[in-house]
Amino acid sequence: MHLEEFAEGGSFLHRLDPRVKFLAIVPYVLVTAVMQGQKGPLAALSVSVVLTALARLDAGKLLSRLVAVNVFVLLLWLFIPFSYPGETVFQIGPLAATGEGILYAVSITLKTNAIVLATIAVLGTSEVFSLAHALIHLKIPDKLVHLFFFFYRYITVQYGRLRNAMLIRCFRPGTNMHTYRTYAYLVGMLIVRSYERSQRIYQAMLCRGFSGRFPVVSHFRLGRGDVVFGLSMAAVTVVLVIV
Amino acid sequence: MHISEGVLSAPALVTGALLAAGGVAAGLKKMDYERIPEVAVLSSAFFVASLIHVPIGPSSVHLVLNGLLGVLLGWMAFPAILVALALHAVLFQFGGLTSLGVNTVIMAAPAVTAYYLFNRPIRRGGHLLSTLAGFGSGAAGIALGAVLVAVALVSTGEEFTGVARLVLAAHLPVMVIEGIVTGFCVIFLKKVKPEVLEVGK
Image (tube, rainbow over the protein chains, first blue to last red):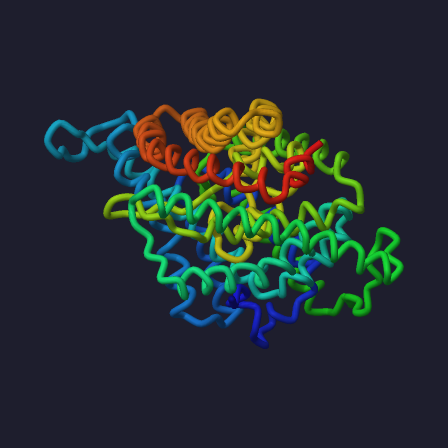
């Protein structure tokens, strides 16, 4: 399973300090999320497009990601224009679409895509483990970060073998009790194995003298590019708030 | 059961974030350092299980299993779900950073409810009672989650009522499937590894 689709690359954004990334992106997405109207979200979307261009990502993968995100937005388009109060623009049978409703749906669409693009361009371009490391510096409770660390480490090792075992035995899923029971036992087995594995992991950690914290071998260094990026994102965010 | 970025209003987002912070704090307090691997590896098992697509007629649904996770982990379901959703947000952009709090509550509050309602009957009950309680926890996890999605949407604005209704209706079949799978699963766990049902204490 290759999960970090966008983390490889040599662009400016790939090389930024993950601590700066969090400090820059979190206020920006929060401001974008609570915007109203269309101008603000449009401005945010343009900023996000610039960020995405800076990250020089694989266009195909990026597009398929955006399509997945916009399926939910499409669902909103089926409802919002017809239920928002305002002046009727056109009618389909008994349903009347209002101008205000359409503008509102446009606003949501712009905001969603602006935030998603910024997240991919800024956070997606770092490795997950270095993001977790940055969170420790940002005073997120260390238990939570450790939990995340182990959680992520063990995702990729689990599923494949059990699935293969089912395939080898010619398991064909269908709408019947046998299928549901089989999946339930698959999940059960996954849990049992995970539980046993976790016991071994903890024993192994104790053997290596675990005392509640992980020594870190590589350290972050703040460069000039980081400062420039942090300050410009802060400026952009402030401008978006004022506008 | 995700709400994506840019949809909910500020009050809904803030309320979700505060509730999630409270739940996560309660969960972290329960989780000593020695239990971190246990909770983490179980939550990665759930993450993987949610990739399983179960056929239902011509279509398929993916498992959520928040009810089962709740029965096993109790309050620790909050941090477990938070890390899974954070990964979703960063890697796949399902849900998102700003809606992280709301989405955590949507999945974890039903999980904790399932723990208090069904953990004891599952452990103590006979075959039939355990199966029924398992079904209940799976179904309740989805049903309450769908209700919370609907509440979050409608609290943002009246115009979301239609979408909220659709969300509720769409989760009815998922509820039944999750109930059945969770029912079988708790019986399996009771036979094979009863200790897992004690982790949440």
